[in-house]
Length: 357
Image 1 (cartoon, helix red, strand yellow):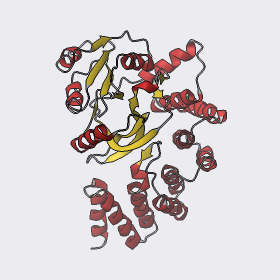
Image 2 (cartoon, rainbow, N blue to C red):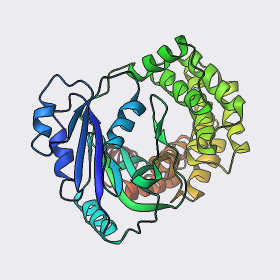
Image 3 (cartoon, rainbow, N blue to C red):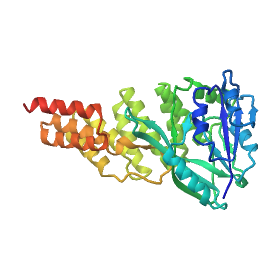
């Protein structure tokens, strides 16, 4: 059976660190925590789980801190988690089974990261991350923010999920300031960094600059296909925020050059036509989103609601606008199949009951 080192970087995580470590402590063989400057009780709590606690001076570089944590590992494989991650019981059992059976010749195990949830706890956003790494492969973290491991060799996808249970938002503008500091120091952003910098600009509602950097990213023609498509999607949102409908439509259609349609793109095209009160064409794109086969093993972001719930709800509204109440009710009922306790579905039901009296 393989052995596992858990390597984490933390700062001021007293509210969540025990929850994380309790979910993994009986699976891993070694816990290594690198603290980057906590001023609360984080380190004291951690010492109840491990004596391998190290200080690391924060230098605005997540990769530097993670690589330092990895350098302290001594076991066969390295697992990394963030303090607000947990492994739920079903996934803990799967993880134990994986540990028992994993071939030591595997270089990396990808695990699904459940990162977004609706009001009822349903997963709305997930994607695979390079999560369990063979120490002999000596993978190194890259990029100061939105860091990643460039894995290669024998890689497998696992059905084990890591669940992100964020209790509070990250400091607003933190990632953006790291990028901007690097740019001021003359650092040339890689294509991947251009993409993530553009995302940070978008999150901070700097739409003009976000557009500029997304376009720079796409112009490199070196981006990962999933990032290219997602860049087109977010660009369309930026253009919509600026009421630039022409460029919104153009960039959505541009996404088709990279691969077959994604549900997010189809829903956004549906929204474009819906906003123009062109309900027939909106229906075409929402129906197409429903017909697409949702990726299973793709490492890209999967916004689950765009593949079922959102198009159903929008089709309900479109058919209602066209006076086709029967079809509207049909799609509201279909949306309920995906989200049985959804408040919007319940509201629509009351609405249809009222107009049918």
